[in-house]
Image 1 (cartoon, rainbow, N blue to C red):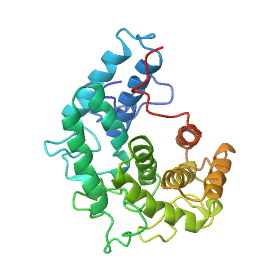
Image 2 (cartoon, rainbow, N blue to C red):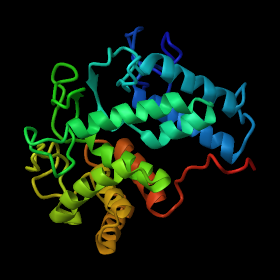
Image 3 (cartoon, helix red, strand yellow):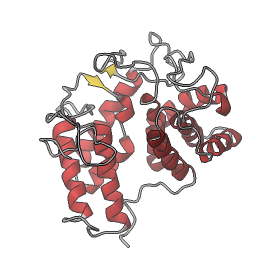
Image 4 (cartoon, helix red, strand yellow):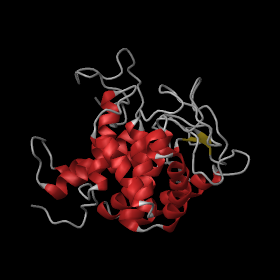
Length: 290
């Protein structure tokens, strides 16, 4: 279900039989595209060959990386939300620097992807400021301008720290644990301190940028969202936080019942977080094919 660029349409129905029903111009979503490219690289490193595909995992990975570079990164190295975006608005939860280092190494294009990393780290820290009220808590807005101002990415889009933007600590934890980037650590220190101060069992599924609880679906004091608990746990683990707190988040996740709003979305992040926290989700680019 690719669109005219060759990238995946942003929506595919649960049966896998239709993409964006009734919309033939359906755009791609770059968070999905980077995950697809990363998964193909990991498949190449884990198994090699092609499996049931008509070309090898490596061929498809390189193709997808090239399409992301062509259609979802601006000439100024801004990582956009998808192929239909102009680059004046960003969704920081899509920014996955750990993946971009792998893309650069894998496709022999490290200079390009390192520039993408640098530019988008600058945007990340631009969003943390006194005006937004989030200078010290790491709660990035769901959508923002390149200068860090919260903005509706589309009519009705949320701007506070919600179910999408809370993925940002997860992606920074990956970059620090895999690559030791000090920018990731500086960010993780902020957001980890915020979540630890709340308590693992009191996390809700939304916060205003100043840290005020603003639940989207849960209650004001309710641990209901796996992606929020995963984010808190991975940030604390990567930042060297209290091991008891990390264990508490892990125990909450393994219960498999933090599935408010979307079982698919929450269980997906549960799986990735538990894998990461146990050392079973890692950068395999240096692993020889089996």
